[in-house]
Length: 173
Image (cartoon, rainbow, N blue to C red; front, side, top):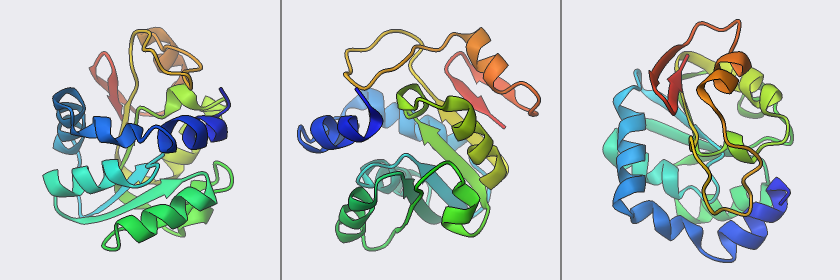
């Protein structure tokens, strides 16, 4: 399923964000915040902002979210007025936000993106210090899943960037 259809026809329609309250997702979001440094944080692929709001609870700071669909950004701004949301029409994330962030999280997004290399380039460009990317390392029943990454696939995707593998499915730059 194409990313926009996935967000609108699956994520929003089925209120999938309610799953973020499940312990396994809470643990994932908490682990993401453990690696972050600084005061300015960005959640890329934030959907309606629920993951951003959860991470803000785990790690106080100046949180923002970025999404690739304008109507989703509008909804997120209504739901979470204490968080800034940005819209990016493409993977030029720096132009969309107008600044770099101390730490950037892109959790459970890259496996839904057709042009994963462009996403990685945009993520690296907008990150000052720490980039945390998570992705399932096995098949999950999700209509938007385009690929399951192996460790080798991720290493190749991030080749040329200074990154460290922290866990099999968590990387940071």
